[in-house]
Length: 290
Image (cartoon, rainbow, N blue to C red; front, side):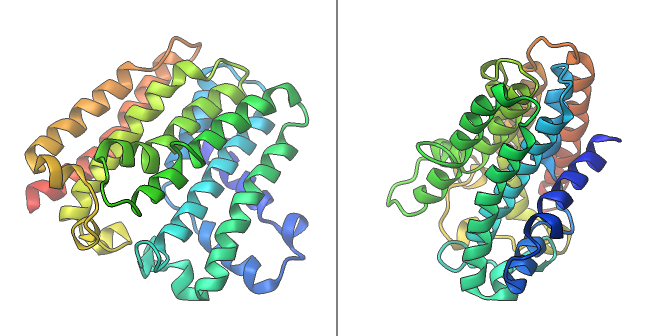
């Protein structure tokens, strides 16, 4: 089974009837709506690729780690789209969760996804319980305080927002959790994998800033122009489009170069280069067309 198939199977199991089928029906519908059909799944796929590159043999905990990261990412999107933050009515080309189910259920669905992610981790560590502490610590740092997704969204409530710190928390932290979590799930030291995740996360954010400035909402499946409308920090607003494009290229090169020594180092470098090229090409083509 390839990585994509393993991930989708793990997510289906995490939100299947056997696991949560007795939940209130509309909550269950909202939770599944937030996760399926799939988005890009960039972070969990990266997690599985790192676990494989580190020589991990226990697919159960690796799959659980990747699934937990995706559930947390989806939870963050549900909350971020709500009127208290972005007020976005479209996500992944369909009505956002609060637009479809209302604010109350959207809030509960996001909360439920956060809790479900850690339940999935606990269940997935049965064969490798000694690795669970490292995995939870890494993922917790990626979503909580002082510098995870929650902190990233909290920066939006401050009067002065440093772009690097804001984007490192809101975007980079979960990418770092993906690479470090994959290593921890494989039984490797997660710390050497931090730089890779942070570099990819920064690159992804700069690409997103370019797409927000120039992208087609029909292609992206979400509104554009939100950074200006909400007065949010962005690479494009701070550096301009030309320098943002140069920064994106530099970050991609930095990410490929930062893969630590591991059994699967060469194929992982190739995979990261290929994946990065896709979103870089889209971001730069939009900039060129603007």
